[in-house]
Length: 163
Image (cartoon, rainbow, N blue to C red; front, side, top):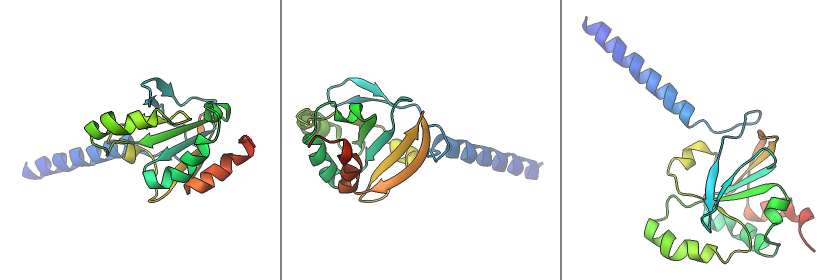
């Protein structure tokens, strides 16, 4: 009887670990990009949709600087015009700091920035230290996952940039 009890516990643990692994499965090429709706720096909700071709995620502020500088030189609709979304993971930022200082500063940016505040976000999307994550999408399906410097991401979008 005791061995049956242990077996049931092991089965439960295995089931829970498989379930939690499924919750945090990062999208890979050939898989649908997960439904994602986030507020921007103005509090307006935006959703990654089937017409989006690039989803760029910044987990690290320093890595995003060259890309942010590039975007600030473009028009306000540059990302939307190029079927791209830019997401900043601010989940690690203390709420008071983000509310009082960071988000008000972000409102001065010349581009739309979707903001993630969910701690589980890091588990749901791939990342590499010092790089931006770039998901290439085709009709809502991931065609590639790349890790690029901010300058490399700016170069990726540069052909569409204003002269």
